[in-house]
Every structure is written in structure tokens, then in C-alpha cells.
Length: 245
Image (cartoon, rainbow, N blue to C red; front, side):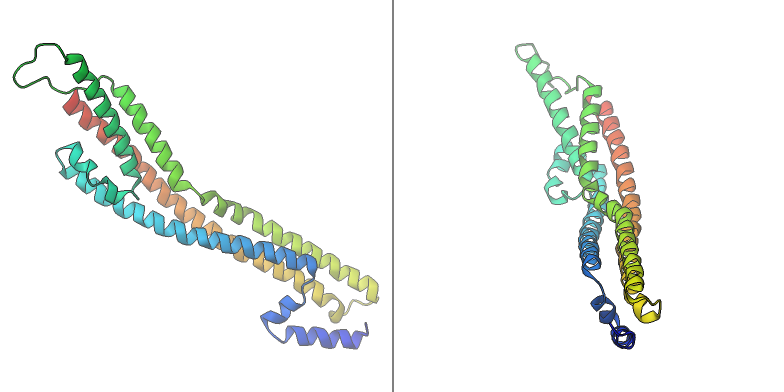
């Protein structure tokens, strides 16, 4: 290629704005950019989804705790669980409520055929340890549910800068190859390769930075929900111990 013509093409490409930079990208750079765009789109979809779901989870958890603490019977709380399914506390409560019911029914079955007083026997739970295990198992299931898809944000934040770096290295290699082929190191020769290198680096950071920011933000929100799960399980156990033992 004639150096003057190369300089003219390079100047025309760079003077046309962002689209001019992308027109200069070679096949390898285009593949790298496509991968980075895919990562970015998927991470933004997860950011929007997790933001909405965690907001609902926090809001409905606050509502559920108000209902739970105002109600005098577990059956009253259970009747509103269907309306507050976004709250992870609902899953823990239902697991504990089911375990209490099973233990109380088992205790009632043992009383069949025995003489009962007028008021009937006080319902009791046989094992608080079994109830504690049921609550812990449900809390683990709920924690896994609210953390779902969050790992992709961590993967995006970690991997995309390296994918962009690969594009950078390839662009620099292309620039040096053009220098050797043209026998010149002027701007018209090296600019396309350097441009490709910088574009992939920028796209890698553009995908990684929001993913890292929202991953840390969502992780802090999930830790709050995890603390609420632990506190609720202890509160549920205390109520059962006071009323069913």
C-alpha cells in the first residue's frame, strides 16, 4: 500500500468517530469484541433481574416479619406466605412450620387410646434439634436461590479484562507486522493496529467495571438477607421452645 494512501485511509477512519474505530478492527479483534459485547449484555440482564428480585425480597421480608411478629398462630402466618414468596424468610418459615406440625401430629398419634383430660394434652415437639436442622437446611436452600446467577457477574468482572488484553496484544502484534511489511513506522502504518488494541481494552473494561460494582453491591444486599435468615431461624426456635415444650 502507498504510504500516502494509507495515511489518508487512516485519517478518514479516525475522523468518522466511534464507528471509524470499529471499521478498523480485524477479524480477531471483531471476535474479541463480539465476546465482550455478549458478556456485557448478559451481565446487564442479570444486573437488572437481580436488582428487581433483591428489592422485592427485602421489601417482602420486612412485610413478612411484621406479619409474623403480630400473629398469635403459625397458621395465620402460613396463610399469607403465598403472597410473599419473594422473601427467603417464607421458605424457612414453611420448613419450620411443617416440621412442627409433623412432630405435633406424631405426638398426638401416640396419645390415641390413652385417657385424656378435658382440655386435651398440650401439643409438644419431640426434638428441637430436628427442627433446627430443618430450619438450617431451608436457610441454605434459600441462600442458594438468592445467590443464583450472581457468580456470572464475578466471572465477567474477572475474565473480560483478560479477553480485552488478548485483543490488545493481538492488535500490537498486527501493528508490528504492518511495520515489517511496509518497512515504515509512521502513524499510518501503526495506527490501525494500536486502534484495535485500545478498542478491545476499552470494551473489556466497559464490561468488567459495572459487573464488579454490582457484584459487590448485590453481595452486600445478600449478606443482609443472610443475617435476616439466621435471626429469623433463632426467633422461630425461641417461639417454639416457649410454646411447644
